[in-house]
Length: 386
Image (tube, rainbow, N blue to C red; front, side):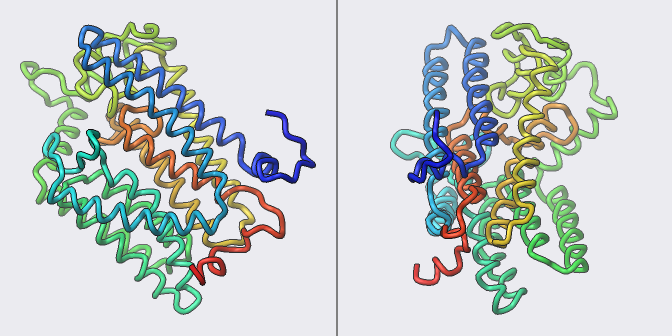
């Protein structure tokens, strides 16, 4: 794509203003997602229904690419308006899962819409992060703590719904994103320490009350201490480590992995292990570097940002993206207890991929370099008449 720097058209200004390096990194992850859809599908090549799922999965990277580009074209004020509308709609749909949702693997997190299983909480994450940033900034002019309190209301409502589903991993991500935003917005250090203590107490309470959380944590500690009796079959985490061991430096080759056949979530939660077995340590380090590059470059582009809304929204989107990647990769490496969370833009799952694409599209739109006469003077003035 050749666009002159003197091109003042809409697309010309977008091309020279958008972060093309981050966009290229995101497209690389989407390509890896296509490759891994084919790699995990090869383990079920005799199952026609499984191959139909693989073909369907290959459609989502194209949709994600279209979302990233189209959303990155939007002005800041449009991002704010759609984020507020999207967050409220996603909250209602997430609450609806408790009433009319489909139960899968003990969790009621999905809605059956037009023949597709949709997980509304995946779309809630990016919209909620941007909406909270706008609420904090808009109300901070009146009272700093009023902004924090008003933004906390939808977050607490979302956490209550996610607890009922239950989805502890999503609770951790949503709470961490909001925590990062209020820290960036200037929450006093004593309150930061109190919030950290409250989060730790909630973790202990979850371990005490929720049986599936206690089971996963106990299993993780037992695996680290190597207390599993030999008669018990290997756990998913142990099979995941076997996959990494089989892959070595360069991997077994595309489609040649064997551990993935016995790995229940090889195409979603444990896709990083399949990468390790088939493409080796080099590919794993490359993917890790891409995620680190996207997060660090986004943080660097925030330096000198005068619009507090852009800074807070970008912080939330990057925290969500990086934390979700860490949870997925850390689970497969047995660094943390397992939690059903996808690897952004790589794992199987339409809701997850499209939700991440929306968040990254908003990130590119908010971090776009604009001229002095642009609408980037801040969303507060634009939203005053919205």
